[in-house]
Image (cartoon, rainbow, N blue to C red):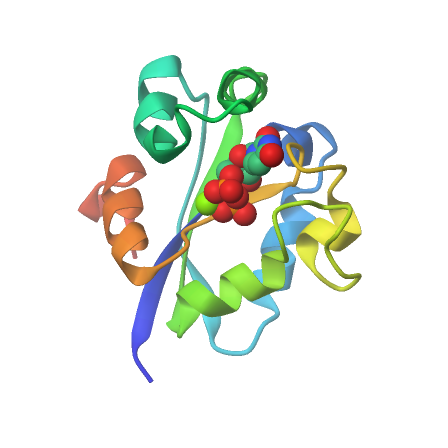
Amino acid sequence: MAIERTLIILKPDCVKKKLAGEVLKRFEQTEGLRIAGLKMKKLNKKILEEHYAHHKDKPFFKALCKFMKSSPVVFSVIEGENAVARVRDMCGPTDSKQAPKGTIRGDLGEDVQMNVIHASDSVETANVEIPRFFKKSELF
Ligand code: UDP
Ligand code: MG
């Protein structure tokens, strides 16, 4: 199986509730996954319009951008075998209320918007999202 890299963003609800360490710990404690990059930053309108371009006509887009700008977020690149799908599985479905216990969103999320974490949804997406937020020299 291929070694992949995937982008995660620990969203404002996660950072405000001081759950960033808890979420990163879950990835670090998963056999074969490791942190390849890590930083904290505030998102702005321009980068959110790029990151969520495929959602710009959705009714939730405006509220999503407001939420994502409401505090700094934590960016990380997680590396490992099959990392893209494994990280998405660990996150659980988008709506925290539908997400099973044992998943990050099921255990720590509030609803469909405040769902703790973004994770790239495919290898192709990861290949676009990682360079959006990390320079090559920031990945190890
Ligand atoms: N979102 C929302 N309302 C919705 C659907 C999604 O606020 O009805 C937010 C939520 O934070 C989600 C993000 O928009 O994580 C991107 O939506 P997507 O469907 O791509 O979900 P994901 O890939 O994050 O599971
Ligand atoms: Mg998505």
